[in-house]
Structure formats: structure tokens, C-alpha cells
Length: 171
Length: 372
Image 1: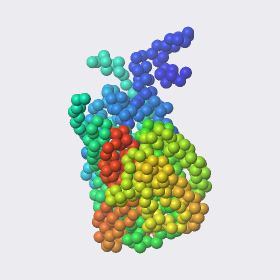
Image 2: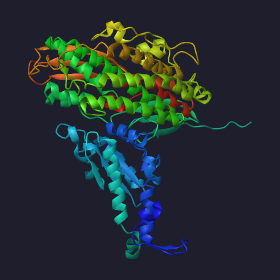
Image 3: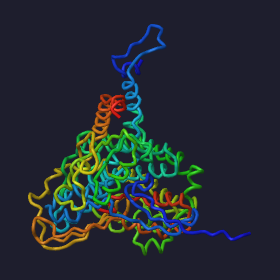
Image 4: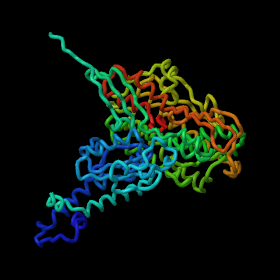
């Protein structure tokens, strides 16, 4: 019963087995975090590690993370590499095209803070968080696939604690 | 029949596009589905390489050369340290030369595996990508046990190496060769001689030899047009003259000489030759200290030098000017991908737009190397 284990302890299951009670949030969050569609979007060296992570050896598919070419299909964008000033406005535009709720994972030193190009990189944006909000930062130059996986699991954790029902109520 | 009025359509492909292999933007002029003109716009990954070289000391530049062509870090470093060693007159120990050859050829295999996988991906075949990355992980593991990094190594130092190879390195490389050799046939069965793949790639984007030479193309792209030109044979650096290997060129097997299929196939054949070189080198690594010739201070005399090596993408050269201080006065990189990309407008006119993706993929560009 893998699903029930991951849903939460606040599930009530009836003895007949075909009925269970949980909150809307728990169910929605479970669905959202198990199918985080990622944008098919690579920038630099980290994109190669991102490809390696989604290929057979590390296999992102098992977390339900599959790359989609259009930003309108995506839940999460991995900023994988150096963001230059020329590219920054394009990334902002891609981010704006993604539907809510959306998440940003900043992968590698370059997109965290400028990385090795911090001091003399006159054409490098010193951190993607200057243009779009970031949920999880993964350090490394480039981060190992295991580090990226952990970052993605952190995003899943974040999704698990959020409440969509409360947002709807507020609106 | 009344005349149909047509007009040209202008389309931007990229900078975010799954098939542009990074952040390349192509400005297309289309008539229907026929490509009339292609103009590549670059600079979306300009990371100020030359500015950094002026601000850093000589050894500090090596990590930045890693990040130029990130699929091929070992060879990038090699071009750079080779120039400095020539400029400073450093005699490199033979053990270092052997290890460098093994590393560079392993890197060539890893780079070509990415080219193979992503090219299949462009054609709509996702499976070869998954298989090629299994083999690539094995190569990366070899690098990892040697220097601790998977992708960007900072392994070749001026006069030596950062780490010696571990004790089990040779047996692991031999195990890799044994595992990898039969896989080349598998790739040929999976992709190279696949009917659909041949239909997509053969006879598209034919690059005549004279155009290739005039444009300055190097590497598999030049060899696929039929010229046997490889710096490892024509201007042997390091110890390449000691090894017995062939330079694969396009043969009249499938399609036309100079088309996309042949550009792809030359890479497959190069992997076989790289394995041959590694096989010859791995058993003959002499004993010695890999850091005995590493100078305490890298301070070359006043002078300038152009050093080049054959990387998986082609000829990578650095033009280094030294003013006698600890920082380079200037380092100019001649990147193979940049030159090879300039061919794209010449060979893609008149093709369908879907073929353009295949032509671009066959050039095997890396944007980090183009924009620097």
C-alpha cells in the first residue's frame, strides 16, 4: 500500500477497504508532488548533469519528473547553468508563461550566485533569484545527480506542506 | 489554376528549444516548409572567458577552460597546458603523457556518446539516448575515481596532473573496454543502420569538401566531407606518434559523402579508434611521479604561442600572449564549434524545416564553446 503510506497518517480507512477519507489538500498535494513536470530547458554545463540525471542511471522518471518542451505544461523549472544578461529576460518570460502553482529549482553555483563568474563576469547574472523567486538552491559546480535528486525531493517536501484549499478560501 | 500568393515567414527557433542543443537562437526565413535562410544568433551563454583569463593567474584559467566545452573538459585543458608547457620549455614526464592520452580518448568516447544520444533524440528516437548514457556513466566513473569530479575536472596541470591514477584504474579501464566494445555494434543496430534514421539523415545537409575547407571546418565534420585531416596524425602532439590508429573518413556506404549520416557515422568510427589507442596505452603507462615537473610558479617568459589539439569537436586552439607576469596578457580561444556552426547557413538552404534539426544535430555544437 505505497500510496497510503505516502499520503499521510490522517487517512481514515474503513474496514471494507474501498473507502477512505482524507483532506483535499493531502490528496491534491500527493498528486502534484508525484507528477512534477519539468521544463525541457538547459543552459550550460549543469544541463548535462540534468540530462544524466534524467537518463537511465539516475532515472528521474521514477519520481514522476518528466521533461516537457512547453512551459505551459510545466510545474517546475530547473535553472541549470549560467544565466547571462541576454538570457535573463528570456528566462523571466518563460517563467511567466508557466501556470500556477509553479516552482523554481536553481541548480549549480552559477544560477545560485554567479559561481566562478561572480567577480569578472560582466555578462553574467549574479543569481537567478534577482529575477524570479527560487524555491530550492542546489550548490555545486556542477552538482552531482544525487544532489539534484535531493533538491527535487526538497521541492516535493515543500509541496507536501502547502495548502491549496486555504488559498481558494482566501480568494 | 489561379496563382497562389505566397510570402516569406520569419521564425525564431530558440533560444529555448529542445533541439538547439543549448541556448542557440536561429532566425529562419521560410517559404512554406522550405528553409530559405538561416541566421544563427549567439551570445546567450557568453561567460566572459577572455576577460577572466586576463584577471586570473595562469593555473587559475584552467577551470575556466573546462567550462568552455563542458562535454570535453579534458581536451580543453590539454590545449591550454600544452601551449604553456611549450612556452616555458617544460619537459613532461612520460607517465603524464600516457595518462593524458588515456583521459583524452576516454573523454572523446564520452563526448561522442552524448552526440549520438542527443542526435537520436533529435530524430525522435529516445532509446539510444538512454543506452548511450549508461556507457557514459561508466566513463565518468573512471574520471571520478581519478580526480573526484564527474564533469569539470581541473585535472591537467601545467607540467603534470592534479592526481595520480588510483591503483585499480588500469583494470577498470580494461573492464570498460571489454564492456563497451560490443555496444558499438548495438548502437549501429539501434540507430546507425535504422531505416527511419537513414531516411532522415542520408543526403540531407551535404557539405562539399571545398566549402568545408573554406569555412575552416575541422573535426568529424571535415572528415565526413572526405578529407583525412586529424591533428593527432598531421601534427602529432604529446605521444600520439607512438600509437597505431586510423583516421576514419566518410565512405560511400550510405547516402552521400558529406551528409548528416556520414557526420554521425564518423563519430561512431572514431570511438572504435579511441578504444584502440586506449588499449595500446593502458598497459604501457610507465612508473613515475605525475607532479614532478609541475612548476611552483607558472610564470612564462615574454612571448606568444598558438597551441592546438584535436578535440572531439575539432581543432581547439589557444593563442596565449605572455608579458612575463603571473597573469596572461591575453588568451584567445579558437573554438571548433563556433567555426562549425558557421557552416549551417551554407548547407541547410532548400531543406525542409524538420531536416534543419537533423543538420544542426549532426554538427554537434556546444554553446559554451561557441559563446565562451
